[in-house]
Image (cartoon, rainbow, N blue to C red; front, side, top):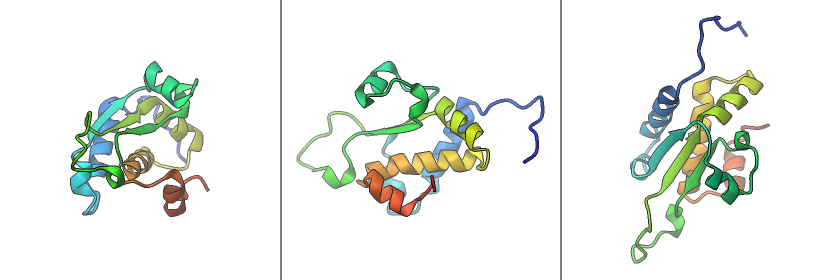
Length: 136
């Protein structure tokens, strides 16, 4: 691995957002269309409320989060109380990227985005892990 330029800067929120949006835009059908209906939010860290709800103390433990009702549980007779939302957290992603040192920032963002959207499609963490053994 080559040393980064001393003038290099960490990927910005805007770059992480563009990578996330590109991931959604490049999903194959039948997943792309429903994915474009999900609100995508990019923040540096999860809020204190999110951390508390997840039972986490360290904001670096959460790279992304899906909030909503998975498609497999939706019913046309049950109106959604709020839109589905995928959160992507830049600083925990950058921390993991730096620690790993063996994956591009684009690949890592793509992985996190697809993982969170898989929850929207109704997949469990075990389902996702069986298909995408990222941590092996």
